[in-house]
Image 1: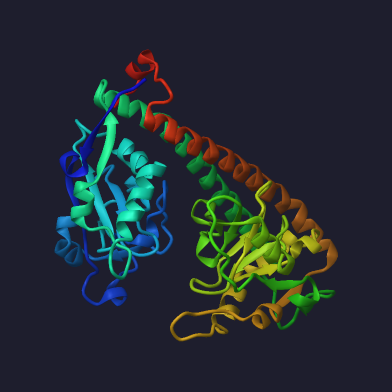
Image 2: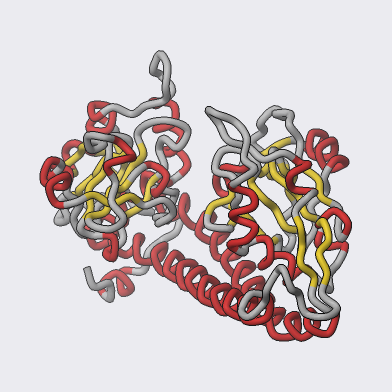
Length: 414
């Protein structure tokens, strides 16, 4: 069995530090330029481009001490997303970080950067980071001193070679997960182009083709919302999805809450989620949709709109892309409420006008788009399987429980 030794991150990293927000805050961001990474971009295992900010060269020069380099590890150090860890993607560079994100730059002859990422994501280290972050008087936070003093265990035998092999096993799973996600993104783009061709191009809402009609969506399917209560969090049980768990039109189950069966049953009576239903974030970052294609994942929802398109399986493809259209985006944007935290009301959702084409047009669209969505569903199921394998392997590889063949180590190209 592998032997491990403890080292402080301050001894293994050439740089540990966070940045700042340019003067002027959000108003100083540019439409393009040098990337400024914020906590919302850092998710466990993956980097999200959602909401990626940009700064100009002058602003970047003022943050030159937090310039990111290839393979740097990113660690969220404040707020609800504290202790989330990923690596900077090559295509994001050049980049800087703001004050909520720390850069961890490993001495690569002593610590494999990918190994560092997975090490921090292992459950014992993740829990320790969260515990440290909770010791503050007010907001959750990790200080530079805490990070420098944080100890991780690294293989003592054949050091960097063993680390690299462990990281390569886990990275191969992540690479396949990312490939599936990119494939799904392309498939959805193709479906959106088809939607535009059928229902947007050359269509005048004021002078609809013969047989087309406008109906409130609640006249077509049921529209509900999730619970407004906050059930007690449990370590095992059922997923409770809130608005903040829907990112890039996908559910982040890794960050979702787990609730008891009793709490789940109570919530589910109000708004049961079925395959082919459509979810919409109603509070916070409002207006993000998700089409439920997950198999064998049972979950409940909180502060999320639920469009029961499972009641009309002949229409779910059309309804999903219709709700994601620019027309509905503008419709919802004009009806947001709240000065500090924005939200949408259930009445607003129920009153959404739907332009319904004739049955033969809808059927033709379904025939072309359904295979694309079913491929997305297949890829999502594979992502779920690979994610479960990764979570299973991670602690065993990091503890040395799984033996690594010496011949395999020699094949790793560091």
